[in-house]
View (tube, rainbow, N blue to C red):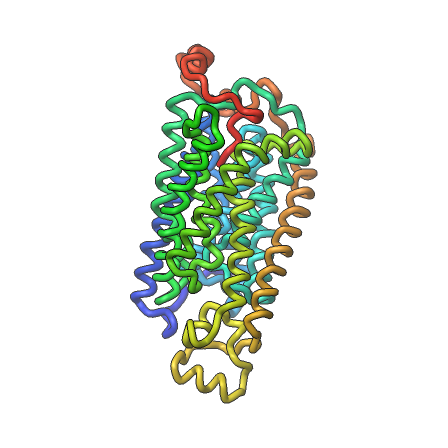
Length: 439
């Protein structure tokens, strides 16, 4: 297999390359600082939250380059450019989301096995999404967030065991560290959603994500106070549900949602996420035996499904009058068929437009839902099978006494080991049915 640096093309002007490079840097920070620090809430698992996140992400961007490159080879070569690096980061995000579901309950070797299988399935699903079903998902809410969340949940389901441990919980300073991850993710999420786009698409995605996140943040604070004891803010909600708007607007980020519509989506996502943490997560753990350490179902899973539904609704109402010829950039399958006069007319305005399938708005909307269902199916089945493989004794397992604990894998300072229990008595977080299920 041969790698090559991509040659400049007329359809990729220098300005687009520069904008995408800046946004790629933002996305890169999200992978290593945002996700890493968001998971540091566990009082005895901070080294692993940041360190193993670092390791997995570094492996994943390399493996993603191969897996995704396999589907996009040119003349037997995998072209490496800024856009392939960006796509590798998007694939990495799916794995890190799954990591959140099994945080503190798996060995590093088990996680690497999960990474290798999930990345291959992710690349396959992503290729089907774009090149077979031809759907719009600029913010990758369906094929990253939905895929990663439900894949991880199914792995956790198969690895089912008694996860009750006094180490699963936060202390004051660990929650503060986790807020660092929240703030980085919140600030850079517009770049995450907009980076694959060009021109007006990119600008619209930034604006819609910006307002969705703002409304989401305010709503998360409000709903958290309403449902929490003594009407106080719950740090679990603030660290996680404030980000749900970025996920929920992702699929429709480059569509004509308008700022007010984006704010409605963000507020809805925040409400669903907070209620999920407060009521749904404990029931899923108790009834189905799915232990979700970071609550990825509430931050990525349900908001991702909402994103798919919103994308379908907006796609159903998309018209040429409203979008002009940029309609065919957002929904390539709606472009006229090859060899038709309509296609020639479009190319008078957008010379680089490829022939489409001449889909109607309703057909495009239906395909958006189909892809959401296909993504759910692949992630659920893939997660179940991967969990079975991870249970093989060769890959090891975490003993009950070492759940959510750095000590088996890291050189932990003796002072920290001796004061760990005393520290947790100093700060008593709210008692929950399921301790600190978040992310």
